[in-house]
Amino acid sequence: PSVALIAIARDDDYTFGVLQSRVHDSWARTVGSQLREVESGLRYTPNPAFETFPFPRPTDAQRAAVGAAAAELNRLREGWLNPPGLSDAELAKRTLTNLYNARPTWLANAHAALDAAVLDAYGWPADLADAEILARLLALNLERAAAERAAATPGAPGPRAADAVAAEPQAPDLPPVEPPDLLLAAEDAAPYG
Image (cartoon, rainbow, N blue to C red; front, top):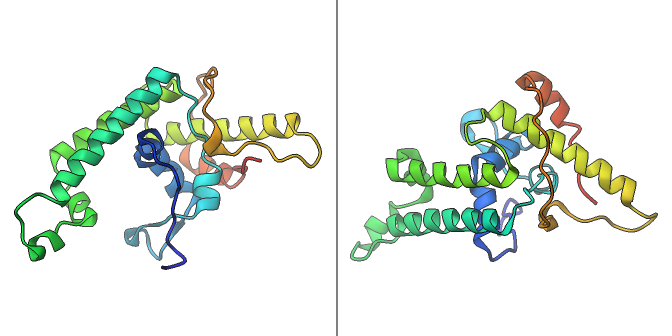
């Protein structure tokens, strides 16, 4: 296996859904790195993209809604990738890259439903622009990192972002941050723990 292979050892639709959402994609593209030029795509690096990502702290109903939307996205993608009756040569052409390059309406609709569920899990409106999502994520990241530092006892590790599951009030409405300021501020994103 390549050193570029990243495995996130979770077996639940909720985590899959959050990581497949526009919310996480926006964060990962902002704090992560590029392969070469922008067109080559994102190189997903776990330290900035995963460890600093402030997962939502949903209610049980919100967690179930994200999980259901993620399961539906997975069902639809698997149905397109592996339909019965195709030859091996035809199946070889059915890749996630080819699917996302074509971006059929059903795929866009499944992602829109997932994104709405994830944004609701944060307590945020579904129509937020990417820059506003990033501003809110950065504020939430910094808020949680500061709270963990304040609560930590010397030498004791704090909780990781992926372990955040308890329901709590969400971040208040924050003023918009312009993308250039956000990109500079995202460099200050703090890992948890």
